[in-house]
Amino acid sequence: MSGLGSGAGAGTTPLPHRSVSNIRSPHTSGNTNPSTPSSSSRPVPSSTFASPSSLRAEEDLLILELGSRKLQIGFAGDACPRGTVWFTPSQLRRVGDFRDWSSESKTNVDWKTRKVTGEKWWTRDHELWEYDVREVDLGLIGDKVEKALREALTKYMLIDSRPRRMACVLPSGLPLPMLSAVLDSLFTRFQPPTISLLSSPVALTVGAGVRSSLIVDLGWRETVVTSVYEFREVNTNRSVRGGRWLVEQTHKLLAKHLPENQKKKEGTTTQDTGDYYLSFEECNDIATRMVWCKAHLSSPKAPKSKAGLPTLHEQDESDPSEAESPIEPSKMVKIPLQSCRSPTTIELPWEALAEPSENTFFDSQYSESSFDDHELPLPLLVYRSLLQLPLDVRALCMSRIIFTGGCANVLGLRGRIFGEVSKLVEERGWDGVIGKGADQMRANPKLKGKKGSRAAVGGPTGVASLSDAGGGQEQDGVWHDAANTAHDACPVEEQLARGQDKTPRVQGKMRAIESLGAWSGASLIAHLKAAPVSTIEREAWLQYGAAGASKPSEVDQKSAARQSLGAGGLMRGAAGNNSWTLGVWGVN
Image 1 (cartoon, rainbow, N blue to C red):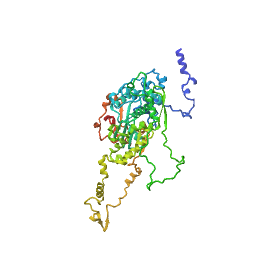
Image 2 (cartoon, rainbow, N blue to C red):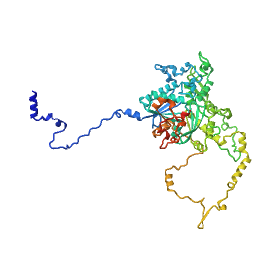
Image 3 (tube, rainbow, N blue to C red):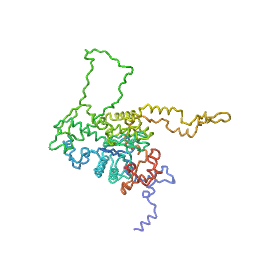
Image 4 (cartoon, rainbow, N blue to C red):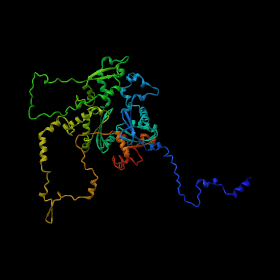
């Protein structure tokens, strides 16, 4: 059977429908080049491009801005953050705690049953950190950052927790233990390959579109005045007057107008609740929406006539319509309160709502000598910050004052600070010596006459004019005055001047400008591919921690150039070096 089969197949031709060549291509006689070209085979996509989400995860850069009370997050290159997560007591609750949906949470009664521990229990659960690290649980700070970031990724960013590069915008005065707690939480729980650190004052300066500025950060815990010159922080001054103090002053104002029966609590004493009769949430809401600031006392009024006494117009005293109207009483405001012993409504004058900001930021009823260096009023703090700067730096910074922070939204506060600083500059000038003796020396006419007589002398002693001394040169009978000879045009200098901006810079006068914010400035820096102040790799941090950072004295000064947004980035020495630093946070 096998022999017959093999012999028959060898002697006969294969059938057409069983030919492999006929199946792959049509049967053509004598035509080796078909009219229809065959399509080329497409390459199979690699595993890198199989999942678009993995490719985007490698390219995306998350910008995080951490403040005392909130976290802002978004992608690099965006104009504004995608979402904001506030640090509240609800983040400290465990799974299965449904107090948010109970009737007590709507009336803010839950704060009364909270256990009182420490002096700052009223505001402790509403903030991320406290600069006094002696009483701070660093592990709790890392847990808060993790929970807030996971909520932001799932609620606002709509992405998973895949490892992505991050850039953190942090205050330049953040203590090193808190920075280590934040970086430990990010590296161990989100596993980003690198984390870049950016300073908030520098990011605010970039967000305003300038290179030098004076940042007045009216923050939660304190007010920080930072001078930035050519994207470098050159001076910093602080005051404890901030948003927390404003909320406490608002609570004092509301408690003063509360009835006595609302101040007593059933089964508790004033020592148990720390003399707090209202919840933090309600006082913070009133301080945000209703507290305002009075205008500057020396605001411009109608100019007085210098020609003499003003003209007195005659009027009929018997006509009541033309009589002077009495002083209008202050407008009364009704504020409903829900967090006290029982819901009530208090009534207080509208002008009384300006007292919290007046007592928090100014304290005009006290003299300057009664304040310590850490509690200076804000106008005096800004003035002394400008006074400590060099002349050229001060000329640029005073024309680029930026107000930022949560308290900057208080109605009239920025104008009041700017007006009082301008008044101090007009009265005192830039002389740091004040007092009666200094005022008498400035007003002494004899000293002014001596200065004027010295200035009236026609030049320094022993210097004669060129014409008297024969300083010129005479060649071929022609007198040549080298001092007044016009310079020849240089073609190289003309070409360099074509690309320069010839617009004169504004300097030497008081001016306030606006900024898009620290987050927007950091997003712009990352979008321009500028190297940050510090870049930390995950492997290096997990192996060495903060101890692996190089000290400022160990950095090569030749390779570390000045911070600039030019082709070399914000810090040219940051890239290309094996050693890494913590920037301004490494010296705190």
